Amino acid sequence: MVQTVPRKRIEILVDTPLVPRIVGKLKAVDISGWSLIHVDSGGGRAGEWQHDDVTGASAKTIVLAIASDTNTARLIDAIAPLLDSYGMLLTVGDVQVVRGERF
Image (tube, rainbow, N blue to C red; front, side):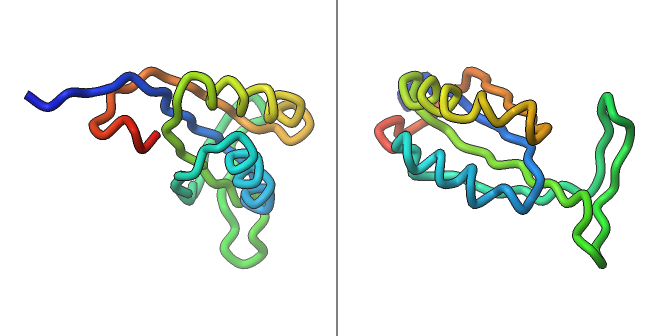
């Protein structure tokens, strides 16, 4: 049977123009792999929103990464000061991965 390794799954919902800043934070804490997922619409405490293809207003992206406990903690420390000022959503969950040495 294939062995799995525990890691953390990190999802950050962020305004698309801030993605380079978040990717920079990932790199700074030695998280080298991530995926970007375009989000078309959603809703929250401030109400519903929808991506505007013409202006790019309200464009959101999910930055998805898998990392070790240590690197995840370092990322949380780096991003926490930005959460309120930029209205980002940060979630972290436990996952099992194959080829854990990659994360």
